Image (cartoon, rainbow, N blue to C red; front, side, top):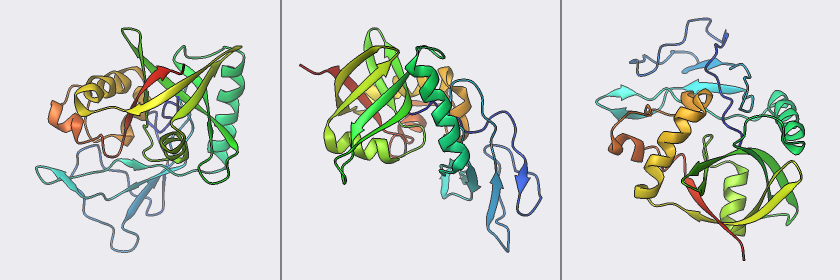
Length: 211
C-alpha cells in the first residue's frame, strides 16, 4: 500500500522563506530567490511519512497553478515505513495495508515497502499516490508482486489499468486515504476529466492472482 500516502494533511511547519503556504488551488507568485515553498507533513495512521516540498507546478486547470507535493525520501520516511512494515507484518493497522515485495529491475534483489490495496467488489487495485517511485517501476518491469499481511502472502500479476477502470479506483483511494490528498490536484468529487488528468502521475494497477 505503497504506503498510503503519508504526505501531509495534518499541518506542516514552513521552511525556507518563512512565508505561509498558499492553499490548494491558489494562484502563486514564485519566490524570486528560491521559487519554492517547502513543507514537512506530519505522520498519521494509514500512511508513510514524507519529507516533501511544495513546488510551483505547471498550470493545470483554468490557469490555476498546481501546488501538489513532490515526493522526497529522507531518514524519517525510512523510519516511518519501517514502523508500518513491522505493524503490517503482524496484521495490525489499516485493513487495506499490505507489504509489497518485488524484484528490483536493476539488481534483481527483492525490495519491500508498505502499500495500500483498494478492494472494489472483490477486485484488487494498487494506486501510486507518490508517482513513479521505485516500487512502481519495479512492478512494471517484473509484472508480478507479492503482497503480505500478517502470515498471509499472495502473488499477483500487475496490469496497468485503463482510464475507465482507474478513475473510480482513484476516487476511492482519495476518500479512503485522505492523507495523500496533497499529492493530487483533483478532489475525489472532481469531474472524470480532472481525475483522468491525475493518471499520468498516479498510475493505477489491477491485481490478478498469479496462477
